[in-house]
Image (tube, helix red, strand yellow):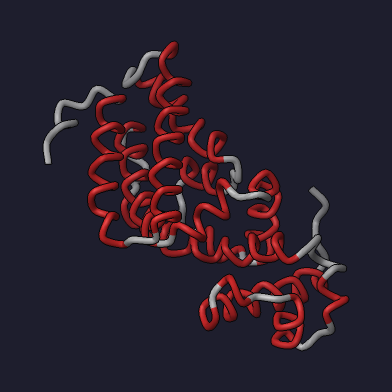
Length: 220
């Protein structure tokens, strides 16, 4: 990936931060190129020198919503944890934040331009490097992956090495967990009902623990 110069980083940062502020103030639905450009202090045409379109700029701005998720990861995960413990902690934190903000997380990982997310995340952390500081190597490897399958793969591989899951079952387990999470997330987005979060979280983790053959899979 081509390294960005200081000017490009600075201008992209202005547009990303302006978009983030507008999302907080007005919501995704009311965003426009004109509003973002005015808030950043540039004309609308300048945005297209740095971002393909509004949707891609929204993806950049949405990466900011991973900040609380990343901070929780940093606080909960330590280098001495087994991979299966890391995997469960990652999904507890990921599920909490994604179910609370389904529109943002669905846009990031399963939306129209989610296939661009890997490059966007890498560029975002080049612009805002402080947001990825303090993470252990395992979680840092996950964070720079935009593809959710590639994000989970380092931990799944380590779980196989540690004997927590069988190699021949690893791909099925990973794909099923991702698909089940996506299904619950999409349902929350469609129904727009926060009262379902606890029920869906419990449902997801029953399946998660069942797939990992954990003894407490059906305990409330």
